[in-house]
Amino acid sequence: QVQLVESGGGLVKPGGSLRLSCAASGFTFSDYYMSWIRQAPGKGLEWVSYISSSSSYTNYADSVKGRFTISRDNAKNSLYLQMNSLRAEDTAVYYCARGLSPIDYWGQGTLVTVSS
Amino acid sequence: AIQLTQSPSSLSASVGDRVTITCRASQGISSALAWYQQKPGKAPKLLIYDASSLESGVPSRFSGSGSGTDFTLTISSLQPEDFATYYCQQFNNLLTFGGGTKVEIK
Image 1 (spheres, each protein chain N blue to C red):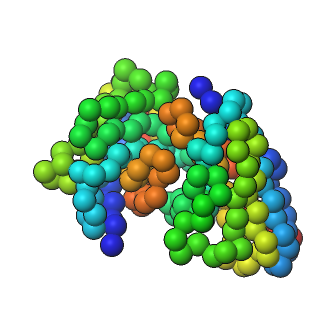
Image 2 (image 1 turned 30 degrees about the vertical axis):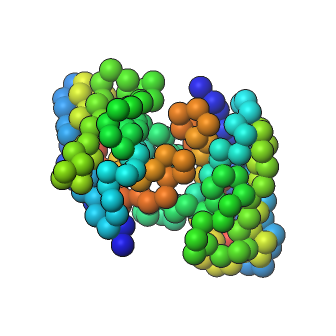
């Protein structure tokens, strides 16, 4: 069965950096676009970034462009999100998700808290 | 960027009620729309894709319709397990989510 397990969340100070990871299993990882979506506490869903199956294409929400970098390692069945220059408004649960159109599987999420 | 406006933002309904949620796109997105259900503390679950296609394993009481700018999610007979928040999402141009509709017990 498809499993997506995020890790790397935690408490970080404003201006700091964090790298999220997502371990995928139960499907051929290299066949799928992958996405990161976040949800601030008590708020709705916000798309953050996606990456194509071969890493040829990436895209970012305006709110994170220039600060976040998505990447993947198909040999390790892993997805990553490097987050730099973090702000309080980046505080959220970050979900790793399979696909783009549509997103058909989601991880359980990892909480990122940006606070001094 | 394409904006998605969901209405209502919340509703109260009883078991057995027919429930309709709408999602309006700021520009035409053909049928590139999905619907998700999210329960507290859980990840979203895909219900409908391509505006009207039912995801495998999703009960047939859920249905979607629409194309262009106006879309609808209908629950034909609300069940206790359907009390949740519902989101629409477009994938015609990057990705955008609607603001959500919380379905509560009357």
